[in-house]
Amino acid sequence: MGTPPHEISADRSQAEFEQRVVRRVAIRLLPLVFALYVIAYIDRVNVSFANLRMSADLGFSDKTFGLGVGVFYLTYVLFEIPGAVIVERWSARKWIARIMISWGFVTVLTGFVRTTGEFYVVRLLLGAAEASFFPGMIIYLTHWFRQRERSRAVACLYAAVPAATLAGSPLAGWLLGVHWNGLSGWRWLFILEGIPAVLAGIVILFCMTDLPEQALWLSGAEKEWLSKELQAEIAAKKKLRDYTILQAFRDGRVLALIAAWFLALTAYLGNAYWIPTFVKRLSGLPDRTVTMLLLVPALTGIAGTLINGWHSDRTGEGRKHSALPLLVAGIVYAFVAMMNLKVPIETSLLLVTTGLIYAFLPVFWSMPTKMLSGTAAAATFGLINSVGQIGGLAGPYAIGFLNQKTHALKASFAFIALVFLLAGGLILSLKSGEGGRPAQSEIA
Image 1: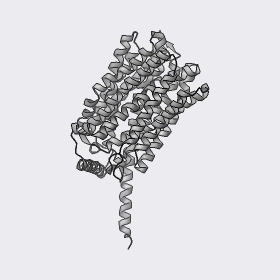
Image 2 (image 1 turned 90 degrees about the horizontal axis):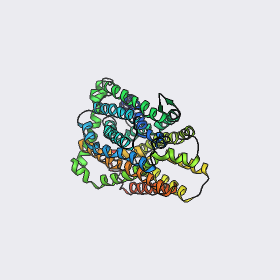
Image 3 (image 1 turned 180 degrees about the horizontal axis):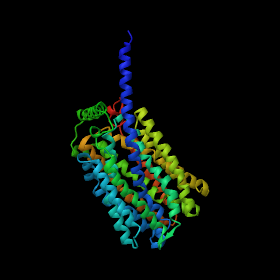
Image 4 (image 1 turned 90 degrees about the vertical axis):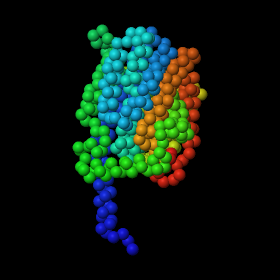
């Protein structure tokens, strides 16, 4: 016998209700987190655009600039785990507002540096100010989205990274050419791009909602259903493994994810901070043209991030979706390092590959959310990101050292290729979950 019509109707009504709640949450929250991360990433990498003029003005060597970029991550790592736990136990809204206001002020301050020492100090201050922003945003999304929607939600967050380049590149190109009130354009780049972070931090206090049960924009039934769904996922994870923070830190899969994230960020951030300089030195093009060319990885990255996150959720598979962009990037960089290509071909490969890399980011961060919940998850997200961010010190510094030592770019390209291949291979080596949808698997 078939299913009675009234049961079919009830099932359809419930499915429509669930879709409506998920859609309402997505429309309310995802544009906000997207905008916040656009501001964050513009302030994170504006130093790479400023370096088209800054190092020459201040007399910095490649090694000095690489170290200055990297020391940001020393203080960033120091405060990452405590901040992530604060988000879980206290308030994402208040803590993220604090982060954005403080880093906005420090970014403005960067526009006034004059010596190597001052540059290092403001980079250290910026790292302390921004620490725990990213894991805090990941934790925030786990408070609102079930596992089956999480890769897409994280993809929307991460689409802000190439979108920030899309917005920031032409702005940087324009600002580098100005000279107002006796200040060079690269100084105005920091000053004007720091102000939106302060304003956004104030807006967050009034527009962000910490938890579903606090949402005035959801009905009582919607809040109750979403809270129960999220609590059921947490209970299922704890039934499978109820970790303390220390137990989570000792889990072999967590350690593998830490190592993979460190390797991936070493190459990814090294490339991100140096790509404007790579393009400039290869092509010899004017600053404004270089910044416009960086729209290519921005557009490629937005498409790749959203498509890869959507397809990962649809198939319930994470390892290959995360590893493949890294492996392809490693192969391309190895090819560029070994071959003597014509400048337009070499530059095009670097630009497209820089955009492709973004696609691994949202899927990678969906993997630890399948394993852990609560304070252990918050601390673990902070640990993975903080150790990984040491790659933000290692990568830019290593590239600056290799550039200065060899007086060429091929060695840096070979270094980036090797680290990308190691990162992709390590992610691919992680054991798959034992079947089922992502909520039931360990690492898909």
